[in-house]
Image 1 (cartoon, rainbow, N blue to C red):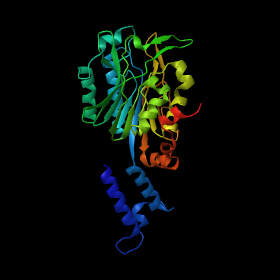
Image 2 (image 1 turned 30 degrees about the vertical axis):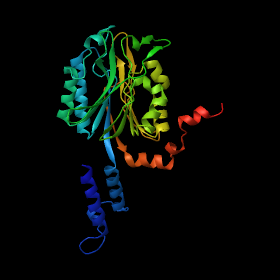
Image 3 (image 1 turned 60 degrees about the vertical axis):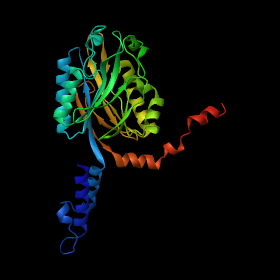
Image 4 (image 1 turned 135 degrees about the vertical axis):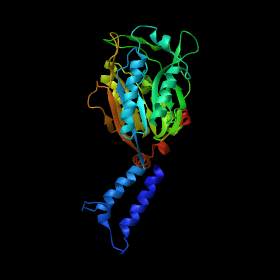
Length: 328
């Protein structure tokens, strides 16, 4: 697709300069009269240097089949919109209503649940970011909270096990102890994709900027993925602020697919799925924070490169050795 767009751009540049009689051929390119060739060529240049992504928002429940049906519908919407990848929120496949339910449904990555999603990616010819899959853990009492990336051939390209576990007391809500049933990961993960080099994280990781610094400056990430199921209280206070901060300080796109609404009598999520550009501007947002659906945006590599070139923080930042030796 990229090669075709490049060839088309070159051809139209040639047509703009000369026709067979060696005269400008503005009329061949556009019906606009206000410098139409430049407008058209600028649009084509953006098309060559950008790729469309989608981010989902949903309310998962304790029903694997129902959640898969929702994901399938959203995948079809994303593919129809021209997206090369769709990102789903944490716990996309299942959110339990009772303690211990997630452990009971946990499966290995080669189990039937993940194979369903691999087939979905292959049939729809689209990449999937599945953040927060209940992967069977090291023993019967623990699982991994695993972010899985699947390519458009239905192959698992990369996995990341959530490093920072949500053991938190939320005033006015409840206490959370993710570590009771979840084994933390210890690897930083990035992977190449059609929408750029991806940095994989999950939810509570968002509060630890050093992970995102590593993804940008050591792993050369261009797009940071933050699938999440933020609580209502923390979402209202911090969700968008933290996401925009991560985008600005790393000069990366941030795609944050969110759980939303009431999952059961004990749990509800804030919502607000967002796509944010490297300048910190929100470029994708659902009109309704509590609805199920997708938002789409274009990853513009020219914008990303321009921001990084004009403000070269990668060159200006100090190595860890500097701070170890700096006077306090």
